[in-house]
Figure: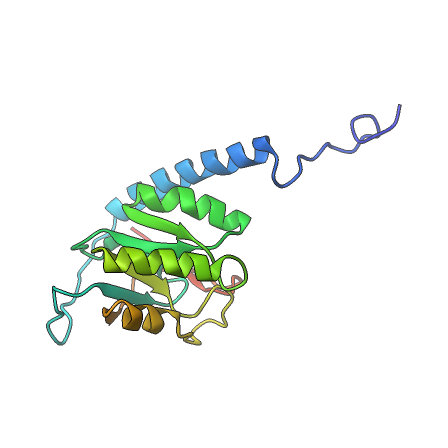
Length: 184
C-alpha cells in the first residue's frame, strides 16, 4: 500500500476542505470568547477628543495595526464596520469580530478590495461608523495608506484618529504588526 495514510506521513486536509473550514469557525468562536473575557478585565480610560466630533456624519476610526484593542473598548455610538482580509487568518477574524460587536465586510488590497470597500461605503452612508487599520494589510507598520481617508471623504464622514497605550502589555515584536496585548 502506498499514499500518505500508509507511508507514515500524516494526511493533511486541503486548505478549503470542510474540516479546515469548520476548524477555523470553531477557533474563531473560541478566540472571540477569550477576547470578550480579556477585554472585560481591562481598566480603560477614554480621553475626549480635543475638538467636538459632529454627530450627524459617519466616523471613520483610524488606528495602526497592532492596536486593535483600542477599537474594542471605544464607546460606540453606532454600529461599527470593519474590513477583514479574505485570507485564512481573515476567516478566523471574520468569526471573532461580530462576537465583539463589529460588522464585518471582507476584502483587502490584494483580493476583493474594491468590492469590500464599496460594501463598507454603503454601510457608512446608511448610518454605520467604520474602522480601518491605516497602515494597510501588509504594512510596513506605521506607514499610512489612503483607504481610511478616502472612505471618510466618499461617505462625507469624519476621520477620527484612534490610539491606545497600555501598561502592562505584551508586544508581539516578531509579528510585522507589533500586536499589543494589554495585560489585566
